[in-house]
Amino acid sequence: MSQVDTPPEDFVRSSKARGDPLLSVENLTKRFPIKRGVVFQKEVAAVQAVEDVTFAFFPGETLGLVGESGCGKSTTARLVLKLIEASGGKIMFDGQDITNLSRRDMRPIRREAQMIFQDPYASLNPRQTVGSIIGTPYRIHKTEGETKKKVQDLMDRVGLNPEHYNRYSHEFSGGQRQRIGVARALALRPKLIVCDEPVSALDVSIQAQVLNLLEDLQEEFKLTYLFISHDLGVVRHVSDRIAVMYLGHIVELATADELYNNPKHPYTAALLSAVPKGAATAQLTDRIVLEGDVPSPVNPPSGCVFHPRCPKAMTLTGGNGVPDNCREGFPPMGQVSENHFCACWYPLEKGEKLHRAAHQ
Ligand SMILES: Nc1ncnc2c1ncn2[C@@H]1O[C@H](COP(=O)(O)OP(=O)(O)O)[C@@H](O)[C@H]1O
Ligand SMILES: [Mg+2]
Image (cartoon, rainbow, N blue to C red; front, side, top):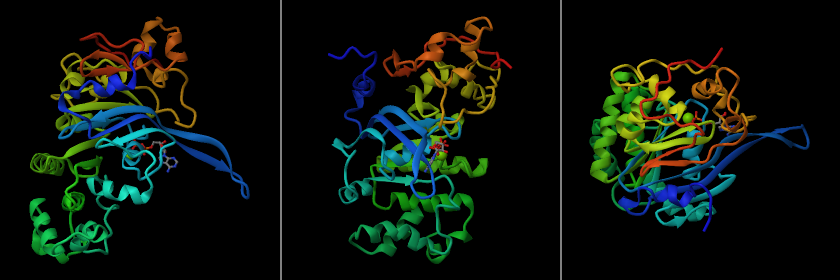
């Protein structure tokens, strides 16, 4: 038996109550090489976009993935759908190891796992008609039956007027375009939809409509979502469980209520404190301002990558920097309770207040 603190299997198994995971990743890592040189390109450094990420999600569930811009959310999304190759780690989909599948062998899986993108303006070709955009998956996968009828049924289902079949995508508003993206993702009746910031580019008034649509479709079509957002307010609204990401690492993972009411990682607490009032947790009414920007993933901090900005680490030594273990070793993922995991040397106590901004 391995003596590792919390082996990945345990981490994955924690919510086994719902059967086998639809998708799981273990120690997933992605480094983008930075090359220099005109003739012979030499790798001089690497962007450490995703580091040793392990999680699983279950049929019918929504797993939220939240974190500031640049922390590796979109890279994780593209990795799990194998739109880009991982540098390391393992990806299982529906009981099958897909880590090393060829493009050809991935084809049947592509039908089952779709993606909705952040920017409905950039992700739809303005010179294509709606009918052609939503019908593309049918043509690629050569499905049976009349495409036009199927597309119009889908348009109707996502709240678009089927008579607008021949209109161009640039004739639609942002919210309507995102509905086109949803219909396209839904076309082949997938099991999984990865939603990468699906409402971040939309007006707040439109966001709720699209979120409600996604929730209705989830129930109707028994969909599983990986739902990505930098906005913990939005993620909390739709997720069963939430994974919090910082600089390529998952630092906390818990059910939405547990994460919200009992955050253990100082980074989670800081994110929560920025959620608009009324939605904020009782014990965290003061906004915790994190000092500085997210450090560069080319040269991430030693030890716990959050330590230079951690409001808790700063307080532990009475103003003499941060504790040695925060600077020296990345904390292992520890189990807080059945469905709650946190990677921090000094996790917060229940109700512990973190008022202080990181020191100046
Ligand atoms: N194709 C790429 N080449 C080099 N660096 C990349 C590439 N894609 C993403 N990155 C870098 O990886 C890090 C994580 O990016 P991303 O996954 O897009 O974050 P998020 O979606 O959380 O904003 C960022 O530093 C980003 O600049
Ligand atoms: Mg992104």
